[in-house]
Image 1 (cartoon, rainbow, N blue to C red):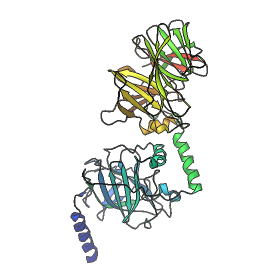
Image 2: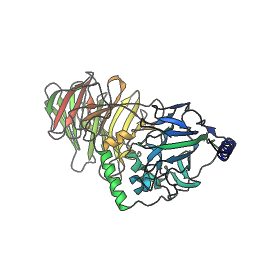
Image 3: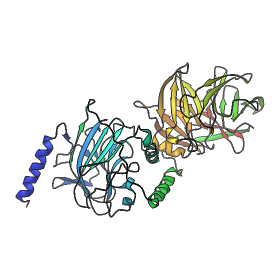
Image 4: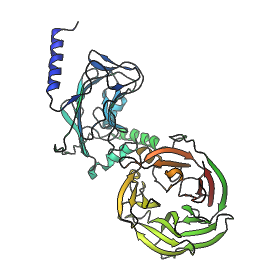
Length: 482
C-alpha cells in the first residue's frame, strides 16, 4: 500500500507539471496510448518500464516539432545503456550508468551526450536506479542537452567549430539537419524507466542562442576504440544494405585505352574517358574512330564522367587533388572531337565528378574526399539551363558511409526516372529518388554490378543498357540492368 507521503508527492508532481506553460504531456501516467511497441514495455506504478526484450517504444501520436523542448525523467539498471531518439536517424540523447558501463569510458558516449557526437561538459548523472531529470532543447541549428538541472551540451552545428563533431556523427549515418521524426525510447537489452514525458513547440520569436560549451576531453584509450569503431562503420558490407529485385547481366566488353575515369554513350558511339584524354569508339565493333588529348601545358587535369546531349559531349572536370578545389564543365563537338569551351563552376565547394540534365535542370555532383575535405559534404547542386544555381541535394548518411574515404564517381538519371550513382570502388549501382520534401535524396536499392565504381552512362537508345568501365583492365563493360 502506498504511503500518504508518496501519494501527496505524486499529486504535487502532477500539479507542478500541469503548471509548466506551453507543455503537453505525451505520457498520461496510466497507459501507453499513442505509443507503439512489441509488448515489451508497460506502465508500472505510473512509470514507463522496459520489462522484457523486444525493441523500442515509439510515440506515434505526433511527430517531434522542428523547434522544441522535451522534458523527461529517467533511470537505468546497473550497467544499462539506452537512449532517447528525438529526430530521424541516429539522433540520440544518451542514457547510461556511467560508472558501470564500458561506454562510460568515452564522454561522447556517456549520459546526456549527443551520442557519438558531442560530450557533456561534466558528469552529473546519478547512480543507477536513481531518477535523473533531462531536457532537450532544439531550435534552428542549436542543440542543447540538460541533465539534473545543468546544461551540459550546447552547440550550434552550423558553426564551423562544430565540423569535427558533425563529421564524427556522420559515420553513424546521422544527419543533424533532419527533421520530422518520431520520438522513441531505446530497448538496448537492459531495464530502463521513464516518467513525466512532456514537450512544447518553441515559438519562432523565442530566441535560443548557443554558448558553444566545451565538451569533456576524451582519453587516448577511448579515442583508439572510437577510431576502431569508425573503421567498422566505414567497412563495406558483404551484402547491399537494401536488397534489389533488379539484376545486372554483363553482355560484352571492349578494350579502350582511355577507360580509366568513366564512359559515356550516344546512339552510335561510346566515349572512354581518362584524366586528360577521350577516345571515341563504335558501339557495334569497338573500333576507335577518334581521340582527343590535352596538350602538355593545357588546363584540363582531371576529367570525370561525361554526357552526350544534342551533339555535344559534356565532361565534369576538376583539379583534384590540388587545393583550392576548382571545377568546370568541358564541352566538345561529339562528331569532330574538337574542344569547344569551358564552363567555370568553381563557386560551389568540391570537385565536380558528374553532371546530368533532366527536365531543363542540370544536376552536378560536387564530391569531397578525405584527402582534401569531408566526404559527408558531397552533394548535388542544381542549376537552370544557363547554369544559374537553384539549390542543393544531399546524400543520406548511410550512403556517405558507403563512400568511405572517397565519394560519388558517377551519376545519371536512368530507367523510370530514378537517379543512379556509383561510388569510387564498390561493385554496386545505387538507385535513388529525388525527395518529395526536404533536400535529402532517398536511397531505394543497391544493385550488384561487375564494374568497380567510377563513372557510367545509360544507353538512351536501348532501355536498361548500361555502359561502365573496368579501370584495371582498361575495358568498357556493356551490361543490362532489368
